[in-house]
Image (cartoon, rainbow, N blue to C red):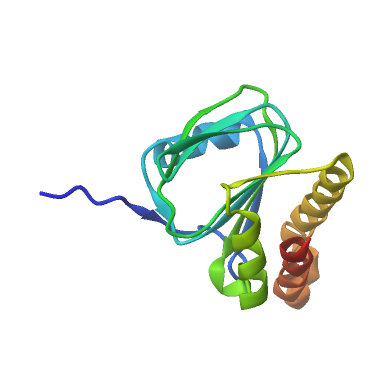
Length: 161
């Protein structure tokens, strides 16, 4: 009998977006599922400000370190091999429906040689501020009816950066 590779879905999201701060606790809670071969039905974007992560993507190993951005597309076979203790940064889960065709083509072109994109110090600062603002907005329940539109409006600049 064939072994099927499970497809993970975004959980606890606002209109197809979910963001978390990367901490040892977050990785430990995710490791049971992401430490095994799987695919996602969504995009994943990771920025490390400190630490390291080793991932296998489409059967090739990649080491993520600060000043690199990792972008995983739906359907890629992946698993987390290991993560460095005291790693900090951001992980963004994004429904593919939120990415228009133009952005999708830009992402595919940027990722032609693999899922890692080297960032300049200015880019690291921009993405760090971007993820901080998105995170604050995502968890700000005082926005009431404007919550989902505010989160979705913030996703677009990150896609086109």
